Image 1: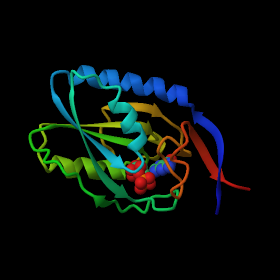
Image 2: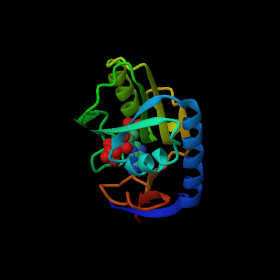
Image 3: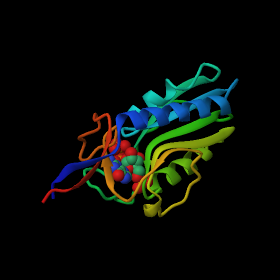
Image 4: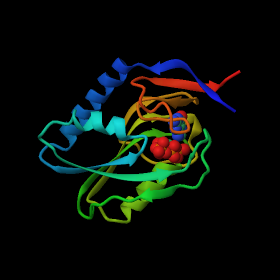
Length: 178
Ligand SMILES: O=P(O)(O)OC[C@H]1O[C@H](OP(=O)(O)OP(=O)(O)O)[C@H](O)[C@@H]1O
Ligand SMILES: Nc1nc2[nH]cnc2c(=O)[nH]1
């Protein structure tokens, strides 16, 4: 089945404004502290790079990345979350913020939350750009959420279909082409 771009769900300007608000909120919450921001590759890379530039320098920000994969080239999760690359940092005793592009079934974030908690950070929070509550199968507490969205497969602003469309500055709905 092939998929095509449909309507814009979130425009570049709307995303920009919300990311700025999230950055302000994170700056207030972590002022005077050191914060390790962990981006989940590949989807979160665009969001993370905009978000960290909206966190002011009252916060000492460090950046690390891990990579997981569960969707492959499909619009449905395999249900098996696989770590493809781990973080380089030791997070024991540190304030940590996981940054993700989307919570869909929640399988990825619930797995990552448990994995990171085993490493005994001082604090662990989650920031997601998009949340699809209708699809949750596993629950995990989201501390910072950009937007709640309907049950549609979306691409753009880091999110892909089969590796494509991550570069689009807005977020679009994709549907099977007729
Ligand atoms: O809540 P879930 O149902 O687990 O879905 C969310 C995950 O799916 C996507 O990752 P994907 O496996 O497509 O990898 P990518 O980030 O490289 O695109 C997305 O980036 C999240 O990590
Ligand atoms: N690109 C993309 N990846 C996802 N992973 C889980 N849900 C989605 C989605 O809606 N779009």
